[in-house]
Image 1 (cartoon, rainbow, N blue to C red):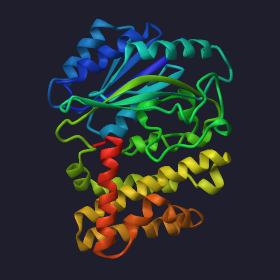
Image 2 (image 1 turned 90 degrees about the horizontal axis):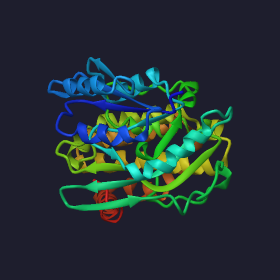
Image 3 (image 1 turned 120 degrees about the vertical axis):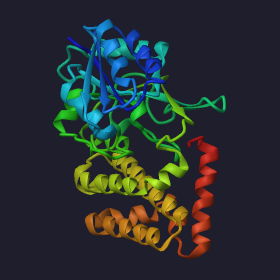
Image 4 (image 1 turned 60 degrees about the vertical axis):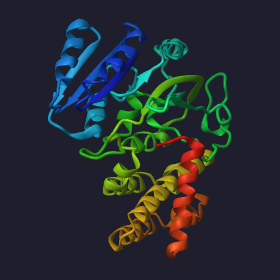
Length: 339
């Protein structure tokens, strides 16, 4: 039995993908690595084939026309043979020591009919060019021992969200919810870590620094200028999330509903802030349109998300409101160490 499928979407990743793949191999012979070469034009495909030749029982390669990060993840979900599923971006890596207790736990789940749905670990922002790091943990939110449910969690801080980096899903759960990410679009990781949550009933948290998230590479999708340039894709992802889950109807657990409401509030805040950074008549209309869309599609959620502390300042009319929103965003950057 294959215990874990690691999927590595790659696009022109030749300069850094080896570090990523080398960090996955120590996880054990009962894991598989699916490298998805997403229409690369450099040596990515050749490197992927090299690993497949060296580890034929563990590494599979998909060469596909460019479909974006989402289609790379989709391919992994379609082809995965592992009981559990983990996405690792090609410029990131996993910590070998931190993975050991996680893999031991997954072994304990391998033959269970009702295996844990979601396994969570910490992630680390590795600002390599600055020589700094910031650990994002959940020890104040989740029980530190044993399996638990959403009823057992505590309150997330405003800086705490489950990201793709921190989650390992049971593979069949992703298939059961028919998760398919949009092609040719950035920021699909938000969908991956949001839409399946109402189907999750059992959770296990490990307070270990599992995932190392590289930040600072030129052109990275979280770069501020890049996010302004790709604002239409951010809006597309936010609309997808609005459509995918009705928090009032689809989410039974109150604590999970509160968390997902805060997550969607964050997405709306990001849209508003970056549209205000652009600061044109067109961007202001787009800001109005995304809020109108939320109101039309999910009227029962609109007022609470609009009144969320993240969105009060970002939507105050006039130049004063714009400056307040941007100031709050830049303060959050310093506190939470992102971008």
